[in-house]
Image (cartoon, rainbow, N blue to C red; front, top):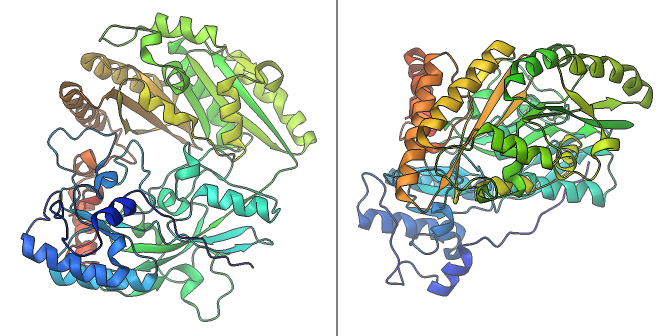
Length: 539
């Protein structure tokens, strides 16, 4: 096992703090963007002074200028309901404990983020205004990589790029499983949101093994085998003894996770990526029905992405290249543009892993099924060099890319994601597609989507792209996603993950008994409600 210490990251905002001076409230600009609820300016100033004594003045941000990075988001906020009061950045577990002590004393709400790159869901902005961001980015050590077992133990500020660099530097034969903007994302943060990647290790929470959590009262808990004295199996065995508690610290506000263990994928002897091209929007049901048995029996082992043409185009092109009218882009316009770039209306990406012999045996079976569905099965031989094929080949082999950030420029820098879950059945996929197109069309937005197909379920990732600088567009985007949450929910298609602007709305779809249980856990673990109030609707 090898432990390393990562250098501190100088974050945006710290420079501004240094320019303003480090003494508390030394500048006319000092003072929060918005005071926390139930705190007056004097109490907030006193809390800030104590926090600066804990982490150093340069790591507390409590004025409009230095907190600007924490206030920026791509999601709609027409009523200004997600404005932070400030931010504090600890460098150790001990500093986290001390911060929580201050927060309990002043009833100061803290919104915890790892790197704050939760794009499409709110970035670092809190569920309600006035919360101080607990920025964990300075805790950025890769604590252990076990080269025999292929396990990792990391702090919140470690990014996938940090891990990739470490694996390369030490020539370790493991692949990462990364989300679409992996270089800037925290494995810990993404796993706690139950995010996914696109290799056979794509279910990040399933591959998680062991946590260290600081509870609201400062108690440090290690889950699984981590609480056993002299344990050597913390990252090897998930379950430990007694109730399995790791899950309650995902998508919740019950504690601050300061360490996360997870499994790394051994590099396979062979890897072959594929794209299946379908040219009609109506083919969506046939694609899902053809894919489902291969995912269920694991002949196709990775999380499959079925990408809509408009989303694919938005990665590298701007809307005005296709369409200059305010209403949704017609399918035939999208189809014609996609065809010029080697794309269909649906482009399904998967890969085969193992040995050359295994891949050679499976490929004809897969080809036959997708050709029978009307698709063209394409490999690197036909698609090598195509921007979109290369992008997905990289994702499916754990390589890092930021290319999908391009979708935020499609229509003026605004973007939020709605992610309803459905069973992997063609008929429900078709019905979801029709409902999404109807609602998006009502507001003049484009059907820019991807379906992520798991073993028996799929996530319909619907991206609402709008002009963030236009208040009318921002209000339309907010209305649109709220209508989507409500109407999809009425059909039984609730979201598995959502942005800060719709957390309470989505939570209501899971029923009062579920919400009441979460509230009881919250009251028991965080009676002063200082940790991320409102996260996932838990208040």
